[in-house]
Image (cartoon, rainbow, N blue to C red; front, side, top):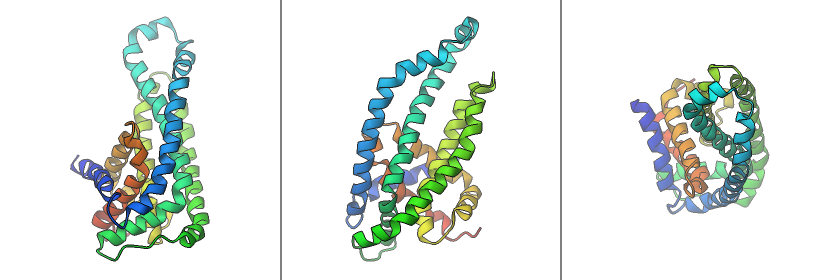
Length: 245
């Protein structure tokens, strides 16, 4: 449990880093992208929530609703919100990817005491194809696991714990997603990234759970992308950089 807590604290460290001199100019563009998309996510989730709930529970037997509504409804409501924010997080990360790599590099320079990195639009443009391909690769990895997780929702009894499994999976994906930027800057490939985080599973899950929770908090979620990139970079430098996989 200590490692879960420690991993979560790095997201808080990320929030403190993104407004520091030499970093904030790299953080504000992803922040703007996130603000626009999460505003759309909130509007979409609120406008569709009632119809989702009605459609899902309309065919359920009465005795199941009587006995399990108190448990199922909050879990299902949380899952719906989670899926909406998770989906919009993927889109936001896809759009912000070209800026997140240079943000991770700027944070690393700051933490190592090096001179502030200059904002280079040419570097951002040159790195954009590789960064976008990295996001597509992560998305394909997510899809491989999303399908069996969705199947669990239609299996009686097991579907009660399916939302909890989705939460753990989402936390793991977010940890992978945001560590990709500092690790990628050090030429660590995606399979090695997964192996490194698996070796530090509780740290990664703590970081991912904190990031997931932050995406559900209004206004705080606008800052999540740059804060998570900064926090993942700090975690890498402090805890992971000396390890081999």
